[in-house]
Length: 116
Image 1 (cartoon, rainbow, N blue to C red):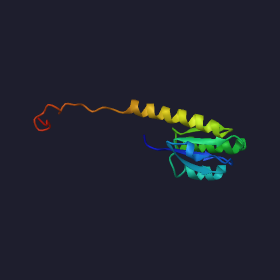
Image 2: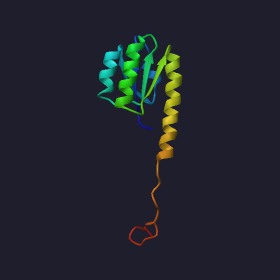
Image 3: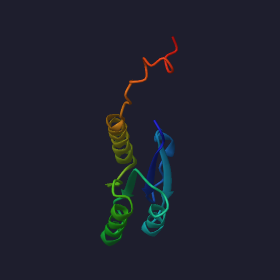
Image 4: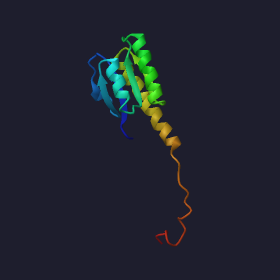
């Protein structure tokens, strides 16, 4: 599975090695997060829940405008991020498999394409 992009907005020290399928962009404030949203397509934005509500609301509005399919969720601990990111990675994997279309096998018996 390809690496997924996560924006992690926190002031906490977090061990990033526990996020196997994620490429993590770590920022410590909302304004920097908004700048990153405008330049990188994220699959997930994890937001520490100690930021003021106006800033969080601003980030959520910009995120939904810039990237309509990005998931934004607040967290209070590293365990919350790990649990939620694993669930989302699994959901995205299933969604990709369901969206994958198989091509028709109409040339399999054609003499030019058959290896027999």
